[in-house]
Length: 216
Image (cartoon, rainbow, N blue to C red; front, side, top):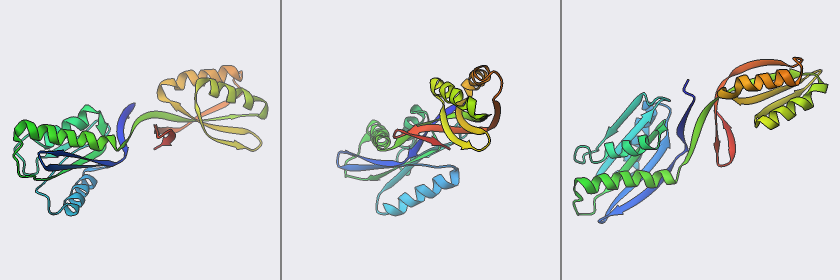
């Protein structure tokens, strides 16, 4: 699994007008190519009377699937510039569609490239972008005497507490970045003189969106 990558967590839209031509960008997070193509078709139906619908998408944590279309515009003037913006922002699992209503004036190759890339940039400004980071969920079990020490260690290390269960023991579940797992384990072990039991639950991605912790 890739340690971190950026996604569009919440989609958005933006518009740019160039010499009376309207360029409307719609951007959405997608999990696969089928979903991306369905989104393209949805926008085509929404703006059924427009002359051009151009798109670009990048899917996969390593960008394994990437495709773009000029939608009837001259080659390399729409889809590729759109793709370049998405790739330049380091985004994954995203699809951008730009709809053009022709304003009667030809823009030329350079003008089209600027318009389509500018529309995508405008759309991204309306999106919530999150960096997904790889972490482990660690379950730490201790007696009641050791719980305060563990809470202190976790707070000092900046670890998020996902859950706490109080039974005959105290069971914490912490979200720990993979790069810090070894150090955090050592701190818990040393801080409790080896009395705490540490178990790796699984690996997950997490991120911060609009000030909130998101676990994927």
